[in-house]
Length: 279
Image (cartoon, rainbow, N blue to C red; front, side, top):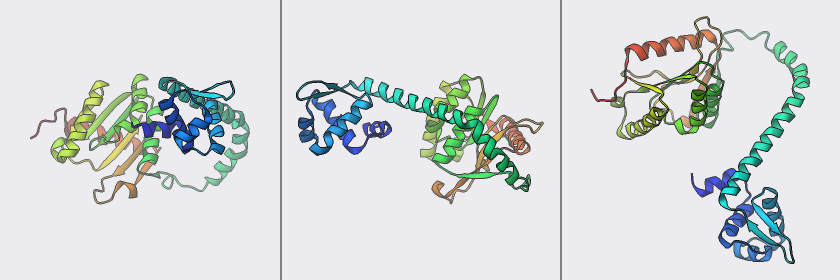
């Protein structure tokens, strides 16, 4: 992650980012000196410094004139994490305070609106491939109770879902990953897959390699042959369609998820290998 990425995650405005970078370079200074050094209008610099102080990134030293001193970089990151944690706690409390009245108002409406929807019509809903599909994948990991199965050419999106996946592992969820055999990949794809496989090995995740093409890719969790529960997100193989034009299907249909589980188990047992050696 670059320093630009870090500042973006801190949620700073352009002037706030410029001021903080300059303060970390200059050290303790006055608002006029900072405005001149950083090219921030003098009419704006005091508001910018007040915002940084409110976030806990900068210390205000009383005097005439006031001086401003940045906290050390580690403290800035610690304060940023604590700020977001408190914001989330406040958000959760606000939502929970309204839960009962919200459900009383809208649950009956939702149920009445869905009375005419058939089981076939509600089999799937879709999200765009990319951040929306990765967000849904992380949610499935977090909500899994017993089992998560992943099918992918190379699990190239591993880094974006790694924290949620490791959380599932920590909760004792059985995670299995079925990748396409390297023989079926080009050299760049093979290298990326190998790097991901090494990371998975660090977590003792079971990995096998399909010796046949995978007609679909995705993740499913907690299939049961009683057809109760389970959820999946998947997309079919469409090599000619770029990812930004594709959509992933999500289903909570227990029978369908059980079928995906059956496909996975048969492929795992009879059409895969635990070695990447070329044939």
